[in-house]
Length: 420
Image (cartoon, rainbow, N blue to C red; front, side):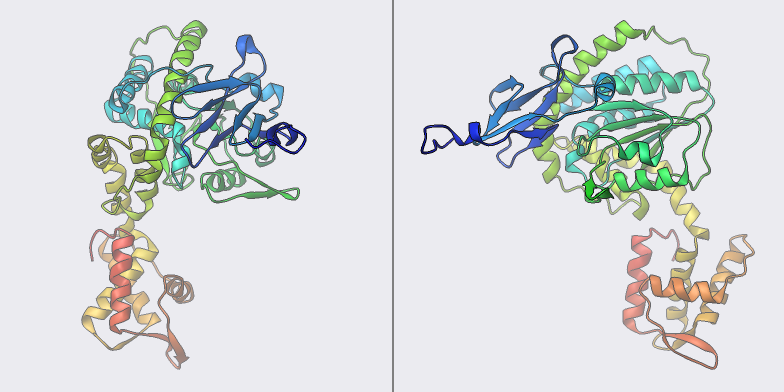
Protein backbone atom coordinates (compact mmCIF):
# COMPACT_ATOMS: atom_id res chain seq x y z
CA UNK A 1 0.00 0.00 0.00
CA UNK A 2 1.58 3.25 -1.20
CA UNK A 3 1.45 6.46 0.94
CA UNK A 4 0.03 9.55 -0.76
CA UNK A 5 1.59 13.02 -0.57
CA UNK A 6 -0.35 13.96 2.57
CA UNK A 7 0.68 10.78 4.37
CA UNK A 8 -2.67 9.09 4.02
CA UNK A 9 -2.81 5.75 2.28
CA UNK A 10 -4.55 5.11 -0.98
CA UNK A 11 -6.69 2.48 0.67
CA UNK A 12 -8.02 4.90 3.29
CA UNK A 13 -8.98 7.41 0.61
CA UNK A 14 -10.54 4.98 -1.85
CA UNK A 15 -14.13 4.01 -1.21
CA UNK A 16 -14.43 0.36 -0.04
CA UNK A 17 -15.59 -2.11 -2.65
CA UNK A 18 -18.81 -3.91 -1.71
CA UNK A 19 -18.46 -7.65 -2.22
CA UNK A 20 -20.03 -11.00 -1.41
CA UNK A 21 -16.78 -12.75 -2.32
CA UNK A 22 -13.64 -12.37 -4.41
CA UNK A 23 -11.09 -14.71 -5.97
CA UNK A 24 -7.78 -13.05 -6.83
CA UNK A 25 -5.11 -14.05 -9.35
CA UNK A 26 -2.57 -14.61 -6.57
CA UNK A 27 -4.80 -17.28 -4.99
CA UNK A 28 -6.13 -15.07 -2.22
CA UNK A 29 -9.86 -15.13 -1.54
CA UNK A 30 -12.43 -13.05 0.26
CA UNK A 31 -15.49 -14.82 1.66
CA UNK A 32 -18.57 -13.43 3.33
CA UNK A 33 -19.10 -15.08 6.68
CA UNK A 34 -21.90 -14.90 9.20
CA UNK A 35 -21.75 -12.38 12.01
CA UNK A 36 -21.40 -13.24 15.66
CA UNK A 37 -24.79 -14.04 17.26
CA UNK A 38 -26.73 -13.22 14.09
CA UNK A 39 -25.00 -9.87 13.66
CA UNK A 40 -24.05 -8.25 10.38
CA UNK A 41 -21.95 -10.40 8.04
CA UNK A 42 -18.20 -9.90 7.91
CA UNK A 43 -15.49 -10.70 5.41
CA UNK A 44 -12.72 -13.27 5.72
CA UNK A 45 -9.56 -12.64 3.70
CA UNK A 46 -7.33 -15.67 3.20
CA UNK A 47 -3.93 -15.16 1.56
CA UNK A 48 -2.92 -18.81 1.46
CA UNK A 49 -1.36 -18.82 4.90
CA UNK A 50 -3.50 -16.82 7.33
CA UNK A 51 -7.01 -15.47 7.80
CA UNK A 52 -8.04 -11.89 8.46
CA UNK A 53 -11.64 -11.22 9.51
CA UNK A 54 -13.43 -7.90 9.79
CA UNK A 55 -16.11 -5.57 8.52
CA UNK A 56 -13.33 -4.18 6.29
CA UNK A 57 -10.45 -6.17 4.79
CA UNK A 58 -7.59 -4.99 2.59
CA UNK A 59 -5.98 -6.69 -0.38
CA UNK A 60 -3.25 -5.03 -2.44
CA UNK A 61 -4.14 -1.53 -1.36
CA UNK A 62 -7.90 -1.91 -1.84
CA UNK A 63 -10.50 -2.06 0.89
CA UNK A 64 -13.48 -4.41 0.73
CA UNK A 65 -16.69 -4.39 2.74
CA UNK A 66 -19.70 -6.76 2.81
CA UNK A 67 -22.17 -6.05 0.01
CA UNK A 68 -25.58 -4.96 1.23
CA UNK A 69 -28.09 -7.81 1.25
CA UNK A 70 -31.72 -7.40 2.23
CA UNK A 71 -32.17 -8.43 5.86
CA UNK A 72 -34.93 -10.93 5.00
CA UNK A 73 -32.59 -12.65 2.52
CA UNK A 74 -29.69 -12.51 4.95
CA UNK A 75 -31.74 -14.28 7.64
CA UNK A 76 -32.33 -17.25 5.32
CA UNK A 77 -28.91 -17.33 3.64
CA UNK A 78 -26.53 -20.02 4.89
CA UNK A 79 -23.05 -18.61 5.55
CA UNK A 80 -20.04 -20.13 7.30
CA UNK A 81 -18.85 -18.48 10.50
CA UNK A 82 -15.38 -20.04 10.46
CA UNK A 83 -13.11 -22.40 8.58
CA UNK A 84 -11.96 -25.81 9.80
CA UNK A 85 -9.87 -28.56 8.15
CA UNK A 86 -11.85 -30.76 5.77
CA UNK A 87 -9.33 -33.59 5.37
CA UNK A 88 -8.77 -34.98 1.88
CA UNK A 89 -11.32 -34.54 -0.89
CA UNK A 90 -12.19 -38.23 -0.67
CA UNK A 91 -12.69 -38.04 3.09
CA UNK A 92 -14.87 -34.94 2.82
CA UNK A 93 -16.96 -36.46 0.04
CA UNK A 94 -17.45 -39.68 2.02
CA UNK A 95 -18.49 -37.70 5.09
CA UNK A 96 -21.01 -35.72 3.04
CA UNK A 97 -22.36 -38.88 1.40
CA UNK A 98 -22.80 -40.56 4.79
CA UNK A 99 -24.98 -37.69 5.96
CA UNK A 100 -27.15 -37.94 2.84
CA UNK A 101 -27.45 -41.73 3.08
CA UNK A 102 -28.21 -41.75 6.79
CA UNK A 103 -30.60 -38.81 7.00
CA UNK A 104 -32.45 -39.20 3.68
CA UNK A 105 -32.07 -42.88 2.82
CA UNK A 106 -31.18 -42.55 -0.84
CA UNK A 107 -29.73 -45.39 -2.90
CA UNK A 108 -25.99 -45.51 -3.48
CA UNK A 109 -25.71 -43.83 -6.89
CA UNK A 110 -28.03 -40.99 -5.89
CA UNK A 111 -26.01 -40.47 -2.71
CA UNK A 112 -22.77 -40.28 -4.71
CA UNK A 113 -24.26 -37.72 -7.12
CA UNK A 114 -25.76 -35.57 -4.36
CA UNK A 115 -22.43 -35.59 -2.51
CA UNK A 116 -20.60 -34.35 -5.59
CA UNK A 117 -23.30 -31.75 -6.19
CA UNK A 118 -22.65 -30.35 -2.70
CA UNK A 119 -18.91 -30.09 -3.37
CA UNK A 120 -19.58 -28.51 -6.76
CA UNK A 121 -21.58 -25.74 -5.05
CA UNK A 122 -18.33 -24.69 -3.36
CA UNK A 123 -16.36 -24.70 -6.62
CA UNK A 124 -19.06 -23.42 -8.97
CA UNK A 125 -16.82 -20.51 -10.06
CA UNK A 126 -14.67 -23.09 -11.87
CA UNK A 127 -17.36 -24.52 -14.18
CA UNK A 128 -18.95 -22.97 -17.26
CA UNK A 129 -22.36 -24.57 -16.69
CA UNK A 130 -23.71 -24.97 -13.16
CA UNK A 131 -25.49 -28.27 -12.50
CA UNK A 132 -29.04 -28.52 -11.22
CA UNK A 133 -30.60 -31.10 -8.92
CA UNK A 134 -34.28 -31.98 -9.42
CA UNK A 135 -36.13 -33.80 -6.65
CA UNK A 136 -39.32 -35.49 -7.84
CA UNK A 137 -41.64 -38.22 -6.66
CA UNK A 138 -44.51 -38.85 -4.25
CA UNK A 139 -42.49 -39.05 -1.01
CA UNK A 140 -42.59 -35.32 -0.32
CA UNK A 141 -41.52 -35.76 3.31
CA UNK A 142 -38.17 -37.21 2.28
CA UNK A 143 -37.93 -34.63 -0.47
CA UNK A 144 -38.38 -31.86 2.10
CA UNK A 145 -35.80 -33.51 4.32
CA UNK A 146 -33.26 -33.59 1.49
CA UNK A 147 -33.93 -29.90 0.82
CA UNK A 148 -33.33 -29.10 4.50
CA UNK A 149 -30.08 -31.09 4.46
CA UNK A 150 -28.86 -29.39 1.30
CA UNK A 151 -29.52 -26.07 2.99
CA UNK A 152 -27.04 -27.16 5.67
CA UNK A 153 -24.46 -28.55 3.25
CA UNK A 154 -24.35 -26.34 0.13
CA UNK A 155 -22.51 -23.05 -0.21
CA UNK A 156 -24.63 -19.86 -0.03
CA UNK A 157 -27.83 -21.90 0.08
CA UNK A 158 -31.04 -19.88 -0.09
CA UNK A 159 -34.48 -21.54 0.29
CA UNK A 160 -37.20 -20.06 -1.94
CA UNK A 161 -40.79 -20.74 -2.95
CA UNK A 162 -43.37 -19.07 -5.16
CA UNK A 163 -40.48 -18.04 -7.42
CA UNK A 164 -41.25 -15.97 -10.52
CA UNK A 165 -38.77 -14.56 -13.05
CA UNK A 166 -39.20 -11.08 -11.54
CA UNK A 167 -38.67 -12.42 -8.03
CA UNK A 168 -35.50 -14.27 -9.00
CA UNK A 169 -34.12 -11.15 -10.71
CA UNK A 170 -34.66 -9.13 -7.53
CA UNK A 171 -31.95 -11.10 -5.69
CA UNK A 172 -28.37 -9.92 -5.25
CA UNK A 173 -26.18 -10.20 -8.33
CA UNK A 174 -22.99 -12.27 -8.26
CA UNK A 175 -23.73 -14.00 -4.96
CA UNK A 176 -23.26 -17.53 -6.35
CA UNK A 177 -26.35 -18.70 -4.50
CA UNK A 178 -27.40 -22.29 -4.28
CA UNK A 179 -31.06 -21.74 -5.16
CA UNK A 180 -33.26 -24.16 -3.20
CA UNK A 181 -36.64 -23.81 -4.92
CA UNK A 182 -39.63 -25.74 -3.56
CA UNK A 183 -42.92 -25.31 -5.40
CA UNK A 184 -45.52 -27.39 -7.20
CA UNK A 185 -45.11 -25.82 -10.65
CA UNK A 186 -42.47 -23.91 -12.57
CA UNK A 187 -43.43 -21.74 -15.53
CA UNK A 188 -41.71 -22.01 -18.89
CA UNK A 189 -40.40 -18.45 -18.43
CA UNK A 190 -38.81 -19.34 -15.11
CA UNK A 191 -37.30 -22.51 -16.58
CA UNK A 192 -35.81 -20.40 -19.37
CA UNK A 193 -34.38 -17.89 -16.88
CA UNK A 194 -32.91 -20.66 -14.74
CA UNK A 195 -31.30 -22.13 -17.84
CA UNK A 196 -29.70 -18.75 -18.59
CA UNK A 197 -28.61 -18.40 -14.95
CA UNK A 198 -26.85 -21.77 -15.16
CA UNK A 199 -24.35 -20.42 -17.69
CA UNK A 200 -21.45 -18.52 -16.12
CA UNK A 201 -20.94 -16.17 -19.06
CA UNK A 202 -24.57 -15.17 -19.57
CA UNK A 203 -25.60 -11.91 -17.92
CA UNK A 204 -29.24 -10.87 -17.73
CA UNK A 205 -30.12 -7.23 -18.57
CA UNK A 206 -32.36 -5.58 -15.97
CA UNK A 207 -33.14 -1.85 -15.72
CA UNK A 208 -29.92 -0.70 -17.32
CA UNK A 209 -27.59 -3.11 -15.55
CA UNK A 210 -26.39 -6.69 -16.06
CA UNK A 211 -27.50 -9.26 -13.52
CA UNK A 212 -25.34 -12.25 -12.62
CA UNK A 213 -27.49 -15.08 -11.21
CA UNK A 214 -25.00 -17.87 -11.90
CA UNK A 215 -25.17 -20.64 -9.32
CA UNK A 216 -26.23 -24.23 -8.75
CA UNK A 217 -29.95 -24.91 -8.50
CA UNK A 218 -32.10 -27.39 -6.60
CA UNK A 219 -35.75 -27.76 -7.65
CA UNK A 220 -38.20 -29.78 -5.55
CA UNK A 221 -41.47 -30.52 -7.30
CA UNK A 222 -44.60 -32.05 -5.83
CA UNK A 223 -45.04 -33.99 -9.06
CA UNK A 224 -42.92 -35.20 -11.93
CA UNK A 225 -42.60 -32.78 -14.83
CA UNK A 226 -42.93 -33.74 -18.45
CA UNK A 227 -39.88 -35.60 -19.72
CA UNK A 228 -38.68 -32.73 -21.91
CA UNK A 229 -39.38 -29.87 -19.51
CA UNK A 230 -36.04 -29.81 -17.70
CA UNK A 231 -32.61 -29.56 -19.32
CA UNK A 232 -30.05 -32.33 -19.21
CA UNK A 233 -27.67 -30.41 -16.96
CA UNK A 234 -29.78 -31.69 -14.06
CA UNK A 235 -29.36 -34.68 -11.78
CA UNK A 236 -32.74 -36.27 -11.09
CA UNK A 237 -33.36 -37.70 -7.64
CA UNK A 238 -36.48 -39.85 -7.39
CA UNK A 239 -38.29 -39.85 -4.06
CA UNK A 240 -40.28 -43.06 -3.82
CA UNK A 241 -41.74 -44.27 -0.51
CA UNK A 242 -39.49 -46.76 1.28
CA UNK A 243 -41.11 -47.30 4.67
CA UNK A 244 -37.68 -46.88 6.22
CA UNK A 245 -37.32 -45.17 9.61
CA UNK A 246 -34.94 -42.22 9.48
CA UNK A 247 -32.98 -40.57 12.32
CA UNK A 248 -34.20 -37.40 14.00
CA UNK A 249 -33.32 -34.32 11.96
CA UNK A 250 -34.67 -31.47 14.08
CA UNK A 251 -33.53 -27.84 14.15
CA UNK A 252 -30.77 -28.55 16.67
CA UNK A 253 -29.34 -31.26 14.41
CA UNK A 254 -29.62 -28.96 11.39
CA UNK A 255 -27.77 -26.12 13.15
CA UNK A 256 -25.00 -28.48 14.26
CA UNK A 257 -24.56 -30.05 10.82
CA UNK A 258 -24.67 -26.66 9.13
CA UNK A 259 -22.01 -25.17 11.41
CA UNK A 260 -19.61 -28.09 10.99
CA UNK A 261 -20.18 -28.67 7.28
CA UNK A 262 -20.02 -25.02 6.25
CA UNK A 263 -16.68 -24.59 8.03
CA UNK A 264 -15.22 -27.59 6.19
CA UNK A 265 -16.80 -26.54 2.90
CA UNK A 266 -15.02 -23.17 3.14
CA UNK A 267 -11.70 -24.93 3.70
CA UNK A 268 -12.43 -27.28 0.78
CA UNK A 269 -13.28 -24.34 -1.50
CA UNK A 270 -10.15 -22.33 -0.97
CA UNK A 271 -7.94 -25.43 -1.14
CA UNK A 272 -9.38 -26.75 -4.42
CA UNK A 273 -10.76 -23.80 -6.38
CA UNK A 274 -7.61 -23.14 -8.40
CA UNK A 275 -7.22 -26.84 -9.18
CA UNK A 276 -10.84 -27.08 -10.31
CA UNK A 277 -10.32 -24.14 -12.65
CA UNK A 278 -7.35 -25.87 -14.29
CA UNK A 279 -9.01 -29.29 -14.55
CA UNK A 280 -9.18 -30.82 -18.02
CA UNK A 281 -11.76 -33.62 -17.90
CA UNK A 282 -12.37 -35.62 -21.07
CA UNK A 283 -16.14 -35.93 -21.34
CA UNK A 284 -16.12 -37.10 -24.97
CA UNK A 285 -17.33 -40.59 -24.00
CA UNK A 286 -20.64 -39.10 -22.90
CA UNK A 287 -23.39 -38.14 -25.27
CA UNK A 288 -23.18 -34.48 -26.19
CA UNK A 289 -26.13 -33.48 -24.00
CA UNK A 290 -24.48 -34.81 -20.82
CA UNK A 291 -20.96 -33.43 -21.26
CA UNK A 292 -21.48 -30.16 -19.37
CA UNK A 293 -22.99 -32.05 -16.42
CA UNK A 294 -20.13 -34.58 -16.44
CA UNK A 295 -17.51 -31.81 -16.45
CA UNK A 296 -19.23 -29.99 -13.59
CA UNK A 297 -19.42 -33.13 -11.47
CA UNK A 298 -15.77 -33.90 -12.23
CA UNK A 299 -14.78 -30.41 -11.07
CA UNK A 300 -16.15 -31.28 -7.62
CA UNK A 301 -13.16 -33.60 -7.05
CA UNK A 302 -10.34 -31.87 -8.96
CA UNK A 303 -7.46 -33.56 -7.14
CA UNK A 304 -8.74 -37.15 -7.27
CA UNK A 305 -8.67 -38.89 -10.65
CA UNK A 306 -10.25 -42.08 -9.30
CA UNK A 307 -13.31 -40.17 -8.09
CA UNK A 308 -13.56 -38.47 -11.48
CA UNK A 309 -13.50 -41.84 -13.24
CA UNK A 310 -16.47 -43.00 -11.15
CA UNK A 311 -18.60 -40.45 -13.01
CA UNK A 312 -18.75 -42.75 -16.04
CA UNK A 313 -20.61 -45.32 -13.97
CA UNK A 314 -22.74 -42.76 -12.11
CA UNK A 315 -24.07 -41.28 -15.37
CA UNK A 316 -24.22 -44.51 -17.38
CA UNK A 317 -28.01 -44.92 -17.12
CA UNK A 318 -28.98 -41.38 -18.20
CA UNK A 319 -26.36 -41.54 -20.94
CA UNK A 320 -27.82 -44.79 -22.29
CA UNK A 321 -31.35 -43.40 -22.06
CA UNK A 322 -30.41 -40.28 -24.04
CA UNK A 323 -28.63 -42.36 -26.67
CA UNK A 324 -31.68 -44.60 -27.12
CA UNK A 325 -33.98 -41.57 -27.44
CA UNK A 326 -31.79 -40.29 -30.25
CA UNK A 327 -33.04 -43.12 -32.44
CA UNK A 328 -36.18 -41.02 -32.97
CA UNK A 329 -34.83 -37.45 -32.74
CA UNK A 330 -35.15 -35.49 -35.99
CA UNK A 331 -31.62 -34.04 -36.11
CA UNK A 332 -30.05 -37.44 -35.49
CA UNK A 333 -32.24 -39.20 -38.06
CA UNK A 334 -31.35 -36.44 -40.55
CA UNK A 335 -27.62 -36.99 -39.96
CA UNK A 336 -28.08 -40.73 -40.44
CA UNK A 337 -29.99 -40.09 -43.67
CA UNK A 338 -27.11 -37.95 -44.98
CA UNK A 339 -24.63 -40.71 -44.13
CA UNK A 340 -26.80 -43.30 -45.88
CA UNK A 341 -26.95 -41.09 -48.99
CA UNK A 342 -23.17 -40.54 -48.89
CA UNK A 343 -22.65 -44.29 -48.70
CA UNK A 344 -25.03 -45.09 -51.54
CA UNK A 345 -24.07 -42.19 -53.87
CA UNK A 346 -20.59 -40.92 -52.94
CA UNK A 347 -19.88 -37.66 -54.74
CA UNK A 348 -23.41 -37.56 -56.12
CA UNK A 349 -26.43 -35.37 -55.45
CA UNK A 350 -29.46 -36.03 -53.25
CA UNK A 351 -32.62 -33.95 -53.06
CA UNK A 352 -33.96 -32.82 -49.67
CA UNK A 353 -37.21 -34.65 -50.41
CA UNK A 354 -35.26 -37.88 -50.98
CA UNK A 355 -33.34 -37.38 -47.73
CA UNK A 356 -36.65 -36.90 -45.92
CA UNK A 357 -37.91 -40.18 -47.38
CA UNK A 358 -34.76 -41.95 -46.18
CA UNK A 359 -35.35 -40.46 -42.71
CA UNK A 360 -38.99 -41.63 -42.76
CA UNK A 361 -37.82 -45.14 -43.62
CA UNK A 362 -35.32 -45.07 -40.73
CA UNK A 363 -38.09 -44.04 -38.34
CA UNK A 364 -40.45 -46.68 -39.76
CA UNK A 365 -37.91 -49.44 -39.13
CA UNK A 366 -37.67 -48.21 -35.55
CA UNK A 367 -41.38 -48.52 -35.01
CA UNK A 368 -42.42 -44.92 -35.57
CA UNK A 369 -44.64 -44.08 -38.52
CA UNK A 370 -44.02 -40.38 -39.15
CA UNK A 371 -44.47 -38.06 -42.12
CA UNK A 372 -41.64 -35.52 -42.26
CA UNK A 373 -42.33 -32.00 -43.46
CA UNK A 374 -39.86 -31.31 -46.31
CA UNK A 375 -39.67 -27.58 -45.50
CA UNK A 376 -38.80 -28.12 -41.84
CA UNK A 377 -36.42 -30.87 -42.82
CA UNK A 378 -34.57 -28.51 -45.18
CA UNK A 379 -34.33 -25.82 -42.50
CA UNK A 380 -32.92 -28.33 -40.00
CA UNK A 381 -30.42 -29.42 -42.64
CA UNK A 382 -29.11 -25.85 -42.95
CA UNK A 383 -29.14 -25.40 -39.18
CA UNK A 384 -26.78 -28.37 -38.88
CA UNK A 385 -24.37 -26.78 -41.33
CA UNK A 386 -25.25 -28.54 -44.59
CA UNK A 387 -25.35 -26.01 -47.44
CA UNK A 388 -27.82 -26.95 -50.17
CA UNK A 389 -27.56 -26.01 -53.83
CA UNK A 390 -30.07 -23.63 -55.49
CA UNK A 391 -33.51 -25.13 -56.12
CA UNK A 392 -34.50 -26.67 -59.42
CA UNK A 393 -37.75 -28.26 -60.58
CA UNK A 394 -37.42 -31.05 -57.97
CA UNK A 395 -36.48 -28.76 -55.11
CA UNK A 396 -33.33 -28.15 -53.04
CA UNK A 397 -30.47 -30.61 -53.27
CA UNK A 398 -27.33 -31.51 -51.41
CA UNK A 399 -24.05 -32.35 -53.13
CA UNK A 400 -22.53 -35.36 -51.37
CA UNK A 401 -18.95 -34.14 -51.36
CA UNK A 402 -16.34 -35.48 -48.98
CA UNK A 403 -16.76 -32.36 -46.82
CA UNK A 404 -20.46 -33.21 -46.39
CA UNK A 405 -19.65 -36.78 -45.38
CA UNK A 406 -17.00 -35.55 -42.91
CA UNK A 407 -19.46 -33.05 -41.47
CA UNK A 408 -22.10 -35.77 -41.01
CA UNK A 409 -19.60 -38.09 -39.34
CA UNK A 410 -18.47 -35.35 -36.95
CA UNK A 411 -22.09 -34.52 -36.08
CA UNK A 412 -22.81 -38.20 -35.48
CA UNK A 413 -19.96 -38.24 -32.99
CA UNK A 414 -21.02 -34.96 -31.33
CA UNK A 415 -24.66 -36.00 -31.04
CA UNK A 416 -23.75 -39.43 -29.72
CA UNK A 417 -25.83 -41.19 -32.36
CA UNK A 418 -26.00 -44.86 -31.28
CA UNK A 419 -26.03 -46.44 -34.75
CA UNK A 420 -24.61 -45.00 -37.98
